[in-house]
Image 1: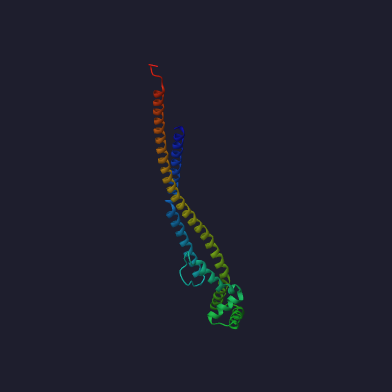
Image 2: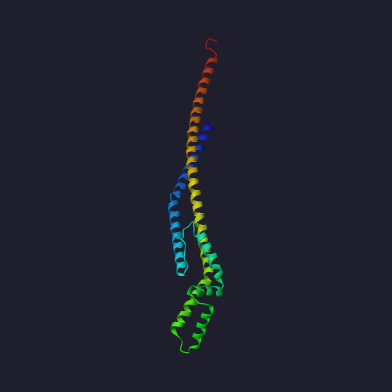
Length: 219
């Protein structure tokens, strides 16, 4: 009997612990959607900011940047822009887009230097060309840095999703454990009741045996 009482007390303690675990993990799981939603919104904002920076630099994106496609798009854009990291190549590209030859450009530079008072329109035209060439020569490095920044946040975002999924899985497991512990408590309670009845029956049997074996007063 004492053993079954101890067993019942132990199972009840186990049930209390598993219920606490279930409730604690349930509270954490309730925050999963909020955490993932907020992290997703931050990621979307970062992607929109990156797209704006690239557009401002004169680069054209084939489609809107998303969590799933940004790496592919930026890698392709980097491959496209990497040859222009060389300043001379970038200048040649700008001149080609403007319909100018290198000779014509050099003539413009010489002309701007030979005019003592300076030709404002010519100076402005040259500055536009040079600024575009500089921007293009720096574009590949900027794209690489931008992707590295997004990759860093993506690592956090992916880790958060893994964490929240783990919490949800643990919460489901804790619920099953709590249900199982309740069944164990019920079983231990039945075992204790059976042990009590067995003890009572044994005592009645023992008392009956004593009465049967006791000497008769006539003896």
